[in-house]
Image 1: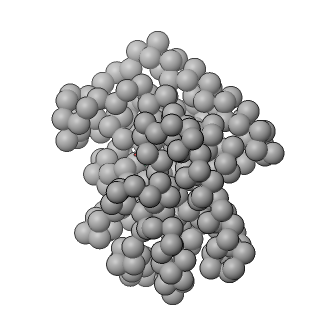
Image 2: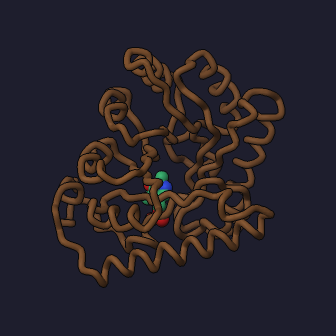
Length: 254
Ligand SMILES: *Cc1c(COP(=O)(O)O)cnc(C)c1O
């Protein structure tokens, strides 16, 4: 486990900080070009930093450089880094699987504004019930497994409509759109249709009234394929390694 990543006050060299800023600018430039190719502008696409295993010192550099949307995979990292980022204005989305017994911890983090990984009813119910107690709401995305591989996470595209319909009674959850995770290492020819599928699913579900008309978010695309995802309509891309460099393998010192 990388608890050390969340807590170690490793000082960051100014060269390293500059490298992070340069990479952020490069990603933003490529994202803007891709947005234009899709008939949109840079403002239509938010760049989220996928910060799993990254220490707060690096994340702070990115936030201070104006990249204020953070994505965390694990509740443990979400809560572990919250204090170290609390003085900087930012938003955090949970982008990894959420177990029901971690819902209370997750909702305790003030910066956490959206759960992108809602893919089952019991989780939604648990979230709703807890939010009811707290007397607040939260944004969610419904995670769909459009790559149709044996990933355990995300609802099957065929099952998305039924799931979304049954979420309607949980009025503490504001559905903002859909999320998918592309398979790492797949070729563009395989990845592109899985992103196009998510866009078409969103359009269909809005057209037939299953999704609210404003549930237009499409969170899809990572370092290797974000330009392509933006061409296919992504409104949020989740970027990790191309900004922060390769992640340390789990269990190694940060
Ligand atoms: C790690 C991660 C990313 C970013 O992946 P990179 O290839 O490092 O950009 C995006 N989305 C999710 C859900 C992730 O876990």
